[in-house]
Length: 78
Image 1 (cartoon, rainbow, N blue to C red):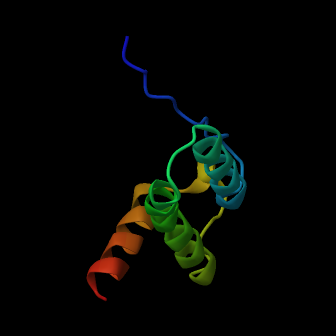
Image 2 (image 1 turned 135 degrees about the vertical axis):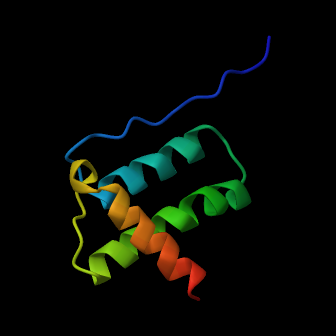
Image 3 (image 1 turned 45 degrees about the horizontal axis):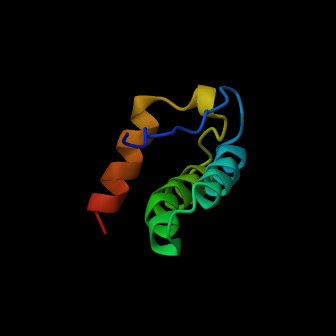
């Protein structure tokens, strides 16, 4: 029987950083390789830094598509 993909719950209203830490613990508990953990975690870390630096909301429930679009535009501009 194939292992089903597991998910980490995102707590609405919670800070991105809290969910970031929780997802890191989840990946470690799933015994993923350090490289996989880094690959999954780095974009979230970058997004968290971007929204914090821009004064955008850090609470998951307050993040809207325009915040994500601004982040993607920022990445494409690099």
